[in-house]
View 1 (cartoon, one colour):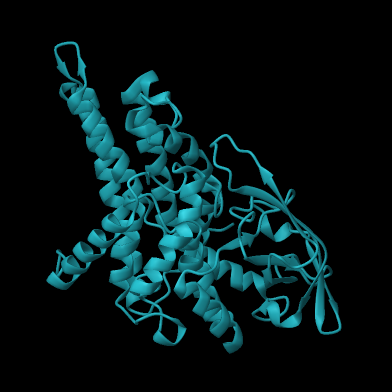
View 2 (spheres, one colour):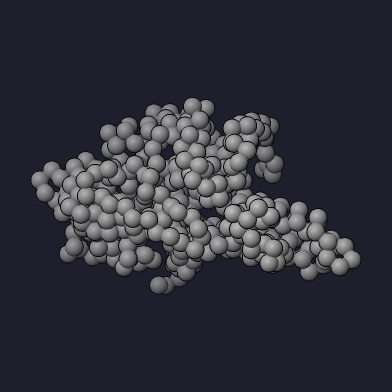
Amino acid sequence: MEFSWSEEDLAFRREADAFVKETLPPWWTGQYTSGERGRVYTKEFCQKLGERGLLTMAWPKEYGGSDAPIWNQVHFKEIMAAYGEPRGPQYMNLNWIGPSIMLFGTEEQKSYHLGRMSKGDVIWCQGFSEPDAGSDLASLKTRAVEDGDDYVINGQKVWTSNAERAEVCFLLARTDPDAPKHRGISVFLIDMDTPGVTVRKIKSMSGWGGLNEVFFDDVRVPRSTMLGEKNAGWSVITAALNFERIGQPRYEASKIVIDKVIKYATTTSHGDGPLSKDPVLRQKIAQAYVRYRAARVLTYRLASIVAKGDDPGPGESSMNRIHQIQLSQHTADLSMEILGLYGRLQTDVPDAPFLGVLEHDWRWCVASTIAAGTLEIQKEQVAVRGLGLPR
């Protein structure tokens, strides 16, 4: 058993890190804090990754990948998280939308959609939540009614990230209103420029402008846009959410917060010396680092299961998600505690510490307890699917 990375792993990390560092512009601070030019830049960056073969390296060659070891993908995801996720919204394509299409799509769907994803040419959004269907996603009311060789879709989605600039939507709609709620849902892959699709922005407390409402008014799409079998969409969405919960190494973003907190504590004096000499703060920083290492180990465990060709299941993936959510909130709260009122300065204030990134992270991490299933639902998954406890 090996407890350290091989020379091949280390060489890949060095080369990939150097490429990202050389490619990113000097003004880049992260996908949520680099402003509108940062949001525009992410597509250009993904296209450069596609040219380099780094975007979908672990995918099969027939779908635009290079059959690279899954550990290369893990290394690269960590690097992306450490640099503020410069892939922008395309991380969704790569982490769970693409794998879901591989698993459930027709050959035509795979050839068309996966090829574009591997080149970094397309931005997706996911049409999941509705005004009355968030945590209880199976209560969704958006309808898709069969009409000859087409489906006509009517309904509304909300909290749809990046819909205002997405080209394709991974959409859930009800195709059988009389079936039990988990059994009458289908998934559609819909072009966002289809007549009848309307996007309206939502302003959030995080300050990020990428949340939207999406309205579908008599949107007509061909039957060929359906992913998987009719009325079997719940199995598709379950797989997609498992991919999502496994795919994001948020712990690396938390590690960046810890590093910034350490830098601030060692360079800022309080009383007789630097903050870093305060025994209480030292304990808190050390505890945050321990939680970071634990989150990384949990993710590596999932990666090792997938690398062996096994399915980690919703219990394992939810356990990983819980720990990463709690870690991100813990480190964000710690940063505000140590920086004090100075840490509340936002990105548009010239003297904001670390360009205001920590303050933004503190606000943004609140949403992480809700995205991809609330923290309470994740715990329920661990209890029922992981431990076999009764509902």
